[in-house]
Amino acid sequence: MSPEFKALVSETDNSSFALGFLASAYACKFAAEGKEEFKEKATQNLEKVRNLTGNDNRYEEGEQRILHRIETREIISRTEFHNKFPNGWKPERKE
Image (cartoon, rainbow, N blue to C red):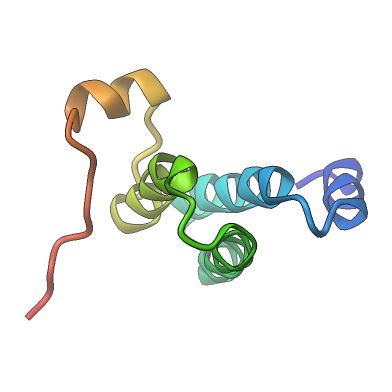
C-alpha cells in the first residue's frame, strides 16, 4: 500500500467507504502474496466497516467479494464475480 493511500484512509477513519477500499486492497495483497499479515489487515478493516454500517445490506456484496478473495486467493472483477455468483457468495462450511 502506498503511504498516500494509508494517509488518506487514516484521515477518514469513520468512512466505511475508505475502510472498505482498504480491506479490499489488503485482500488483493493477500491473494497475490499469501502473507498472513495482509489477510489479518483485510479482516480487521472489514470488521471496522461492519461496526460502522451495522446491518446495512448495501455493503454485503463488497464484503462477499473481499471474503471470497481471502478464502480463494482469486482476484476477479466485479463483473466476473456477478457472472460467477449471480445469487451471491458464501464461504464454504468447514465441518
